[in-house]
Image (cartoon, rainbow, N blue to C red):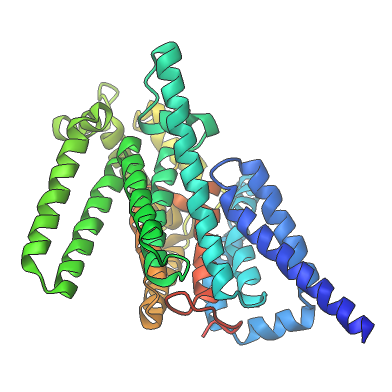
Length: 423
C-alpha cells in the first residue's frame, strides 16, 4: 500500500515536471534560442522517464495522424541519400528535429486536462506580452536617453535579438488564443477579466503595426475583416457590421499614417515593383524577394521531382544569387524566403506534396473537430510560408512543430482534452 502511494506521488511529480517543461519549451522561444534548446532537451528527458517503450510503440502504431505529421522530416532525412553537402544537411536535420520530436512527445504522452491546456495558452500570451512591453520600455529609454527611435520594425525586438516577422506571427496567434479563451476558459467570467482581454488584443494589435511587416499587416487586416463579417452575420445585424468595418478601416488608416517606417515600406512596392537581373539594378526589400523566388524557380526546374537535397539548397541559391547580381542576398546567404519554394528546392515535388498534404489534412482535422484555434493556427502558418522560409529557423520550426502537435494530439475541439490516439 505504501509502495503504491509512493509510486502515485512519483508519477504525479513527473507529470507536473513534464508540464512545466512543456510550457518552458514554448515561452522561452522568443527570448533565447539557447535556453529554448535546453528546455526542449529537458522536456525530452522527462518524457522518456514518463513513458515506457512498449506504451510508446502501442500508441504510435494506431495513430495515423502521427505518421502524417512526421512525414516531412522523414522525406528530408531521405534526401541525405543524394545531397552533396552532407555537413550542411546534418545541420538542417538537427535544426528541424522538432518536426519529429514534438509529434512523438505529443502523441505518446498523457492527455492534458482542460485546465492545463488553458494554462499553457495563458503562458504563451504572457511571454508575448512581456516581450512586447519590454521592447516598448527599452525603445522609450533609448529615445529619452539617446534620441534613437527603436519603436518600429526589427528595432522593437532588438533587445532580444528577435525577428520582427516571427514575433508578428506569434502575436497573430496570441490574438486568436485570446478570442478562444474568452469563449472557453471559465476563469474569464467577470466583466473586468473580459475587459482585460480586449485591452490585451488592442496591445497585440498595436505591436503588429509597430513591427511593420507588410504581408503580416495585410493578412491581419483581411482576417480581422472576415472576423467582423462573421460576427455581424451571427448577430444578424448589418448596421453593426458596417459600423465595425468603417471603424476598423479608420483605425488602420490612422495607424499607417502615423507609422513612417510602414509607410516607407509600402511605398517601396508602389515606386519600385519591377526588377531585372542586372548589375545596375537597385533592389529594395520587395524586389529582392521576387528575385529570390525567381532564382529558386530556376533551380527547381533542374531537379523538379526530388530536389537538390536538403544539404545543397543554400549552395545552389548562392550560385544563382552571384550569377544574377543579388549581392546582398549572396553576402548574407538568404534562403528562398518562401517555405513552399524552399521545400521544393531541397525535396522536389515529393517534398512539396508532403508539406501541402500535411497542412491540408490539419485544416480538415481542425474543421471536423470544430477546433477553430487549430484552424486559425494552420491558416496563419500556411499564409506566412508565402513570404518566409519558416521551417529554416528555430523561431519558425519549433513554433510550428510545437503548436501543430499540441493542437493535433491534445485538443479535440473548443478546449477539450483528448486521449492518445488523436481521434
